Length: 342
Image 1 (tube, helix red, strand yellow):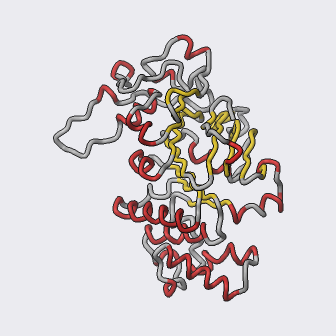
Image 2 (cartoon, helix red, strand yellow):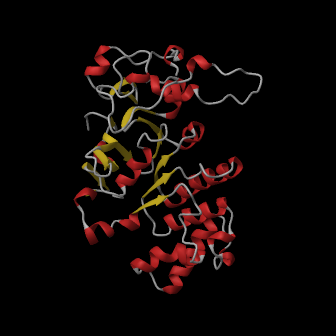
Image 3 (spheres, rainbow, N blue to C red):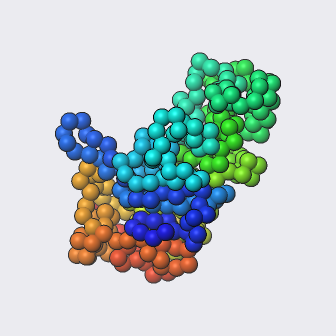
């Protein structure tokens, strides 16, 4: 599959999920204006793969994940999941895909119904779809709760009786109980303590291996994304900037924005002074009136006239590494954002 903004694979027909030219817009009241949340994003994910999506707040990461789930449906584009065109499905036909396509939300506590017990929350999908008899459903709930590290003996409690990390374990159990193929993880550890984050990440890896899951992992933490992803997709203002294997991306970023994100990672050493010359300054342009051409050009010290008139397409710069930039960085090259700061 080729085209603007595509996270390429050698054999896209083997993809479990194929998204092409996804566009999501939100109207701004009665002004006639729209927020361009996601603009012409395409990607492919092979079965068993984990695709990490990173970028600043407001870049369209979570909206992309929700649009895949049709929550809400995108304005245009196609979402083909396991051979089914989700954007063409309506009503009961779309509802029937839900057990095989699940989501884990950012806030583990607010995503659980406070009035229901943990057993009822986890079993709800099985009850709705009539999967097995009552004994089989209870056994399945016990199985997944044990798998995520929650004692089934405590399943009669309600979410407020558990910690944030335990609630996220319950959310994971709820997501896997219907045996989906794909789970979209929308910043599943950002609301948790660092020590708990590691536990949840290890749990996701264990559940992926145990249940044969494919993951879309959305996060701000670049170190987390590197550790859990098979490929990483960088987004900026609704567009795909770069796609690569994590080792290649982190060792040799090709897009200036990717380089800026990596440069912003704090060094865990109080004796090391931050290199402010490599810190990206300026504000993200309004998604209601994004810049012409390359959307990053207003903050990029490498921008030239061509960047304002011609939108860059995703192209190969190395084996498995793709970048949407007219003037990508060479391997090992650094970039100074100092002159544009502020």
